[in-house]
Image 1: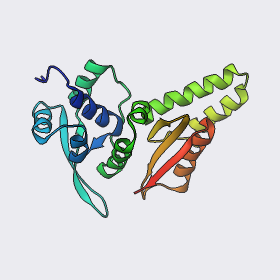
Image 2: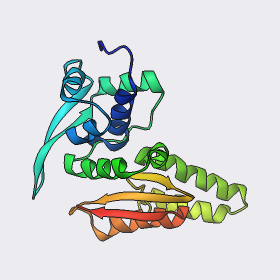
Image 3: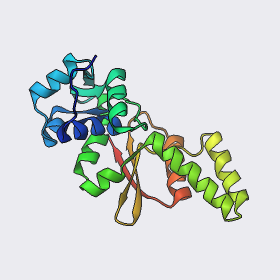
Length: 194
């Protein structure tokens, strides 16, 4: 059972980043004013887990919410669109993007799970505009895997931006499916290769 009864603004910012990015680094914690002792308290209370990661070129340490941490954050904020953590290197690239954004852009930052809702709303809007054939075509592409959600969406001014971290395991079909999402909803691309 967690002993952190009240979340301060720096706690909310840290938990929000983990909820939206999967993993974050110690430097990311520091950017929102969370020091090592507070990270230690999160871990002691079973809210956050320390994760060692390694890829072909680098290795390091990052942190992610545990199931208890997700429950804790949800109970206090109602946030339910948690990003499903991938590898540390992948998610840290998402976190780097997230922390590079303005406060308004961060507030608009949606996870892959939330992007799916945006896509469904887009399909419903097309149907409401009497464009059912187009909506059905896009729904079919989604079902067949020819459309895939990006890692994140955010608003930059009046533009919708799809952010995707592309790893060495991505084939041309996976990238094309992300690009098809971008085309379908009229977003700009911000794809980063790691």
